[in-house]
Length: 376
Image 1 (cartoon, rainbow, N blue to C red):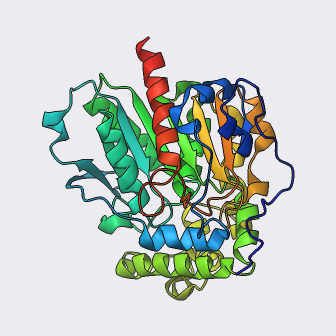
Image 2: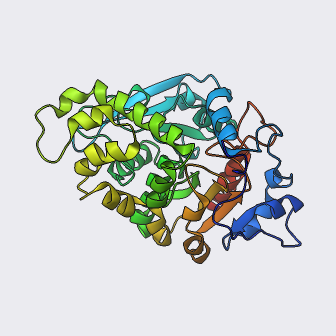
Image 3: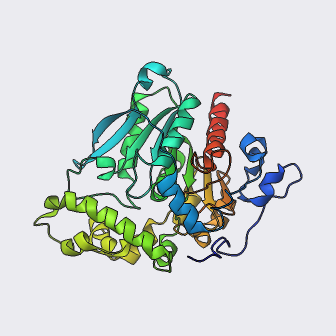
């Protein structure tokens, strides 16, 4: 591992140094016209201090959070939603919330990262925190994830927003008196930001949060093939191949440019995307898929209040891929870049080292602020 990995990629950073800002903000890179709202957040009145023995290296923090962060126990109720193309989506609701919460409670949709689902620790911690604030929460498990069924020869991708469109419409119909919000992590964040840009002025969401978003998938893919990052690449490819193998019969006899043998043995995400993903979603090549699926190309069209939180030393979502200028020019967007955090690690703050990531209280204060604005 590179012990110098705590150095932010991309070089140039701009810290918030306003005299009216809490002193802790000086350690963060803040971009966006709405940055003044951060001064009201109690969670940002404390300095960003990574846990001492973990924050020195981005890979250590990433791996520790992935394997050793606690996973809160929650009883979930699954709803399987049939999509327009006869596919299946698994929505996991908290059991009993229909009886516990008022019908008009704000509703939060959670989009986990690649191969992730409702069982992931970072998802569970956010779910618990939102519920403690009186929010109704549903986890959107992408096709094949969290043991959700796959019923057609198509999974999901960084570019595919149709399923999210259907989920938002479905939950909005179920709870017509509720304001809708969403949080996405990693690939889920990329899909969410693409959706926000796609829907633009017509977006039914009242607010959203993007966490550890790779943003520029061309840069992210290049980064995946360097140094220790190859370990992540192989691990994610292995997890996706495992999902594919469970449903490989759906692809039997399929025509076109699919490379099914490679899809079952892929050693990297790029191999899998070339063999399967880019063909399923109509791209000419993996590079064409990465370029046209990057949410950095969508963020200028976002017309929904959006908070993006990134770590400067994220090995999977490189700092140099963050569309800083586009975020700065969009009055609906706000960016916080922490000096450390790895990928979805953020082992800092009151929950460190085994509890909720540092981001959770900041995210919840942002969402509660938006909900209060809607009510006022």
